[in-house]
View (cartoon, rainbow, N blue to C red):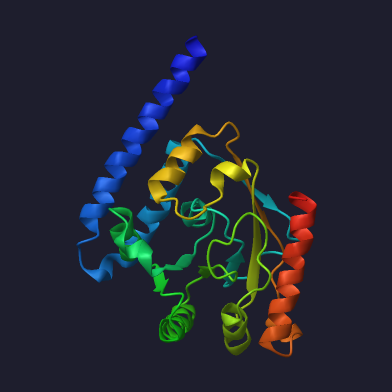
Length: 248
Protein backbone atom coordinates (compact mmCIF):
# COMPACT_ATOMS: atom_id res chain seq x y z
CA UNK A 1 0.00 0.00 0.00
CA UNK A 2 2.73 2.45 1.02
CA UNK A 3 4.73 1.55 -2.09
CA UNK A 4 1.69 2.17 -4.33
CA UNK A 5 1.10 5.57 -2.76
CA UNK A 6 4.77 6.44 -3.22
CA UNK A 7 4.64 5.48 -6.90
CA UNK A 8 1.48 7.54 -7.41
CA UNK A 9 3.02 10.59 -5.74
CA UNK A 10 6.15 10.24 -7.87
CA UNK A 11 4.05 10.07 -11.05
CA UNK A 12 2.15 13.19 -10.00
CA UNK A 13 5.42 15.04 -9.38
CA UNK A 14 6.76 13.94 -12.79
CA UNK A 15 3.63 15.15 -14.59
CA UNK A 16 3.68 18.46 -12.73
CA UNK A 17 7.33 18.87 -13.72
CA UNK A 18 6.53 18.09 -17.36
CA UNK A 19 3.57 20.46 -17.39
CA UNK A 20 5.60 23.37 -16.02
CA UNK A 21 8.55 22.56 -18.29
CA UNK A 22 6.25 22.39 -21.33
CA UNK A 23 4.67 25.76 -20.60
CA UNK A 24 8.08 27.37 -20.06
CA UNK A 25 9.47 25.94 -23.31
CA UNK A 26 6.34 26.99 -25.18
CA UNK A 27 6.74 30.56 -23.91
CA UNK A 28 10.46 30.58 -24.75
CA UNK A 29 9.71 29.28 -28.25
CA UNK A 30 8.52 32.78 -29.20
CA UNK A 31 11.91 34.33 -28.43
CA UNK A 32 14.39 35.19 -31.24
CA UNK A 33 16.03 32.33 -33.13
CA UNK A 34 19.47 33.35 -31.85
CA UNK A 35 18.61 31.51 -28.64
CA UNK A 36 18.28 28.13 -30.41
CA UNK A 37 21.49 26.56 -28.93
CA UNK A 38 20.30 27.43 -25.42
CA UNK A 39 16.77 26.28 -26.24
CA UNK A 40 17.98 22.98 -27.70
CA UNK A 41 19.66 22.02 -24.43
CA UNK A 42 16.40 22.71 -22.60
CA UNK A 43 14.56 20.66 -25.23
CA UNK A 44 16.68 17.60 -24.44
CA UNK A 45 15.94 18.01 -20.72
CA UNK A 46 12.25 18.29 -21.66
CA UNK A 47 12.53 14.97 -23.53
CA UNK A 48 13.97 13.36 -20.39
CA UNK A 49 11.10 14.85 -18.37
CA UNK A 50 8.54 13.45 -20.84
CA UNK A 51 10.10 9.98 -20.60
CA UNK A 52 9.90 10.11 -16.79
CA UNK A 53 6.30 11.31 -16.84
CA UNK A 54 5.30 8.37 -19.05
CA UNK A 55 7.11 6.05 -16.65
CA UNK A 56 9.08 4.47 -19.49
CA UNK A 57 12.12 2.38 -18.60
CA UNK A 58 14.34 3.61 -21.43
CA UNK A 59 17.64 1.72 -21.70
CA UNK A 60 20.62 2.38 -23.95
CA UNK A 61 22.59 -0.72 -24.93
CA UNK A 62 26.03 0.12 -26.29
CA UNK A 63 26.72 -2.67 -28.74
CA UNK A 64 29.32 -0.58 -30.55
CA UNK A 65 32.91 -1.79 -30.35
CA UNK A 66 34.36 1.57 -31.46
CA UNK A 67 33.79 5.06 -30.02
CA UNK A 68 30.98 7.02 -31.59
CA UNK A 69 32.14 9.38 -34.35
CA UNK A 70 32.34 13.08 -33.52
CA UNK A 71 29.54 13.72 -36.02
CA UNK A 72 26.98 11.38 -37.51
CA UNK A 73 23.65 10.83 -39.21
CA UNK A 74 21.64 8.67 -36.83
CA UNK A 75 19.20 6.22 -38.42
CA UNK A 76 16.65 4.03 -36.65
CA UNK A 77 13.62 1.90 -37.30
CA UNK A 78 10.38 3.75 -36.62
CA UNK A 79 7.60 1.63 -35.07
CA UNK A 80 6.24 4.21 -32.60
CA UNK A 81 5.84 7.86 -31.64
CA UNK A 82 7.99 7.47 -28.54
CA UNK A 83 11.25 7.77 -30.47
CA UNK A 84 10.46 11.44 -31.12
CA UNK A 85 11.43 12.04 -27.49
CA UNK A 86 13.40 8.86 -26.78
CA UNK A 87 16.13 9.46 -29.35
CA UNK A 88 16.89 13.11 -28.48
CA UNK A 89 16.78 12.15 -24.79
CA UNK A 90 19.75 9.83 -25.41
CA UNK A 91 21.54 11.39 -28.39
CA UNK A 92 22.44 15.03 -29.23
CA UNK A 93 20.58 15.04 -32.55
CA UNK A 94 18.21 17.24 -34.50
CA UNK A 95 15.46 15.08 -35.93
CA UNK A 96 13.86 15.01 -39.35
CA UNK A 97 10.11 14.65 -38.77
CA UNK A 98 6.98 14.52 -40.88
CA UNK A 99 5.60 17.98 -41.56
CA UNK A 100 2.41 17.21 -39.62
CA UNK A 101 4.40 17.37 -36.36
CA UNK A 102 4.49 21.16 -36.73
CA UNK A 103 0.74 21.25 -36.10
CA UNK A 104 0.79 19.16 -32.91
CA UNK A 105 -0.57 21.17 -30.00
CA UNK A 106 2.26 22.72 -27.92
CA UNK A 107 4.68 19.95 -28.95
CA UNK A 108 4.86 21.19 -32.54
CA UNK A 109 5.91 24.67 -31.51
CA UNK A 110 8.54 23.29 -29.10
CA UNK A 111 9.87 20.94 -31.77
CA UNK A 112 10.26 23.79 -34.28
CA UNK A 113 12.04 26.03 -31.77
CA UNK A 114 14.45 23.19 -30.93
CA UNK A 115 15.65 23.14 -34.54
CA UNK A 116 13.87 20.05 -35.84
CA UNK A 117 13.69 19.57 -39.61
CA UNK A 118 10.51 18.67 -41.47
CA UNK A 119 9.53 16.91 -44.66
CA UNK A 120 6.31 16.25 -46.57
CA UNK A 121 6.98 12.59 -47.29
CA UNK A 122 4.80 12.38 -50.38
CA UNK A 123 6.37 15.45 -52.01
CA UNK A 124 9.52 15.02 -54.09
CA UNK A 125 10.19 18.76 -53.83
CA UNK A 126 9.85 18.69 -50.04
CA UNK A 127 12.20 15.68 -49.80
CA UNK A 128 14.75 17.55 -51.91
CA UNK A 129 14.49 20.63 -49.69
CA UNK A 130 14.83 18.46 -46.58
CA UNK A 131 18.01 16.96 -48.04
CA UNK A 132 19.45 20.44 -48.52
CA UNK A 133 18.54 21.36 -44.93
CA UNK A 134 20.18 18.19 -43.64
CA UNK A 135 23.39 18.97 -45.52
CA UNK A 136 23.36 22.54 -44.22
CA UNK A 137 22.83 21.23 -40.68
CA UNK A 138 25.72 18.81 -41.04
CA UNK A 139 27.97 21.58 -42.36
CA UNK A 140 27.14 23.62 -39.25
CA UNK A 141 28.20 20.70 -37.04
CA UNK A 142 24.83 19.17 -36.18
CA UNK A 143 24.04 15.49 -35.80
CA UNK A 144 20.87 14.59 -37.68
CA UNK A 145 18.42 11.77 -36.88
CA UNK A 146 16.04 10.28 -39.44
CA UNK A 147 14.15 7.12 -40.30
CA UNK A 148 15.12 5.44 -43.61
CA UNK A 149 11.91 3.39 -43.68
CA UNK A 150 10.16 6.64 -44.60
CA UNK A 151 7.79 6.81 -41.64
CA UNK A 152 6.09 4.53 -39.13
CA UNK A 153 5.90 1.19 -40.93
CA UNK A 154 4.97 -1.07 -38.04
CA UNK A 155 6.83 -3.28 -35.62
CA UNK A 156 8.78 -5.13 -38.32
CA UNK A 157 11.42 -3.62 -40.61
CA UNK A 158 9.90 -2.33 -43.85
CA UNK A 159 10.77 -4.06 -47.13
CA UNK A 160 13.30 -1.40 -48.14
CA UNK A 161 15.11 1.74 -46.99
CA UNK A 162 14.94 5.05 -48.80
CA UNK A 163 18.25 6.26 -50.19
CA UNK A 164 18.28 9.84 -48.85
CA UNK A 165 20.40 9.37 -45.73
CA UNK A 166 22.89 7.17 -47.55
CA UNK A 167 23.24 9.56 -50.48
CA UNK A 168 23.94 12.45 -48.08
CA UNK A 169 26.42 10.34 -46.12
CA UNK A 170 28.32 9.50 -49.31
CA UNK A 171 28.40 13.11 -50.48
CA UNK A 172 29.37 14.65 -47.14
CA UNK A 173 31.57 11.88 -45.72
CA UNK A 174 29.56 11.91 -42.48
CA UNK A 175 29.14 8.34 -41.14
CA UNK A 176 25.78 6.78 -40.34
CA UNK A 177 25.12 5.66 -36.77
CA UNK A 178 22.56 2.81 -36.65
CA UNK A 179 20.28 2.45 -33.64
CA UNK A 180 17.85 -0.46 -33.39
CA UNK A 181 14.69 0.24 -31.38
CA UNK A 182 13.02 -2.55 -29.44
CA UNK A 183 9.75 -2.03 -27.57
CA UNK A 184 9.08 -5.07 -25.43
CA UNK A 185 5.34 -4.32 -25.35
CA UNK A 186 5.07 -3.94 -29.11
CA UNK A 187 1.28 -3.78 -29.38
CA UNK A 188 1.07 -0.86 -26.98
CA UNK A 189 3.82 1.20 -28.62
CA UNK A 190 3.27 0.48 -32.31
CA UNK A 191 1.60 3.38 -34.13
CA UNK A 192 -1.19 2.14 -36.38
CA UNK A 193 -3.51 4.33 -38.45
CA UNK A 194 -5.88 5.97 -37.63
CA UNK A 195 -4.50 6.29 -34.08
CA UNK A 196 -3.62 9.75 -32.81
CA UNK A 197 -0.86 11.00 -30.51
CA UNK A 198 -3.21 11.16 -27.46
CA UNK A 199 -4.13 7.51 -28.20
CA UNK A 200 -0.49 6.47 -28.11
CA UNK A 201 0.31 8.49 -24.98
CA UNK A 202 -2.53 6.68 -23.21
CA UNK A 203 -1.29 3.30 -24.46
CA UNK A 204 2.24 4.06 -23.21
CA UNK A 205 0.91 5.20 -19.85
CA UNK A 206 -1.15 2.05 -19.34
CA UNK A 207 1.14 -0.60 -20.82
CA UNK A 208 2.11 -3.40 -18.42
CA UNK A 209 5.65 -3.55 -19.81
CA UNK A 210 7.33 -0.16 -19.93
CA UNK A 211 10.80 -1.35 -20.88
CA UNK A 212 12.25 0.14 -24.07
CA UNK A 213 15.63 -0.91 -25.44
CA UNK A 214 17.72 1.21 -27.82
CA UNK A 215 20.72 -0.67 -29.25
CA UNK A 216 23.50 1.44 -30.75
CA UNK A 217 25.99 -0.25 -33.10
CA UNK A 218 29.22 0.77 -34.83
CA UNK A 219 28.83 3.57 -37.34
CA UNK A 220 28.82 2.77 -41.06
CA UNK A 221 31.81 4.28 -42.89
CA UNK A 222 30.64 5.79 -46.22
CA UNK A 223 34.04 5.19 -47.81
CA UNK A 224 33.27 1.46 -47.75
CA UNK A 225 30.43 1.80 -50.29
CA UNK A 226 30.38 2.57 -54.00
CA UNK A 227 26.84 3.91 -54.30
CA UNK A 228 23.75 4.77 -52.27
CA UNK A 229 21.85 1.64 -53.29
CA UNK A 230 24.55 -0.71 -52.01
CA UNK A 231 24.89 1.41 -48.87
CA UNK A 232 21.14 1.30 -48.16
CA UNK A 233 20.91 -2.43 -48.87
CA UNK A 234 23.76 -3.13 -46.45
CA UNK A 235 22.06 -1.10 -43.70
CA UNK A 236 18.72 -2.76 -44.39
CA UNK A 237 20.31 -6.21 -44.12
CA UNK A 238 21.86 -5.28 -40.76
CA UNK A 239 18.48 -4.17 -39.44
CA UNK A 240 16.95 -7.46 -40.54
CA UNK A 241 19.71 -9.25 -38.62
CA UNK A 242 18.96 -7.23 -35.47
CA UNK A 243 15.25 -7.81 -35.92
CA UNK A 244 15.85 -11.56 -35.99
CA UNK A 245 17.97 -11.23 -32.85
CA UNK A 246 15.60 -9.12 -30.75
CA UNK A 247 12.10 -9.56 -32.17
CA UNK A 248 11.77 -12.92 -33.93
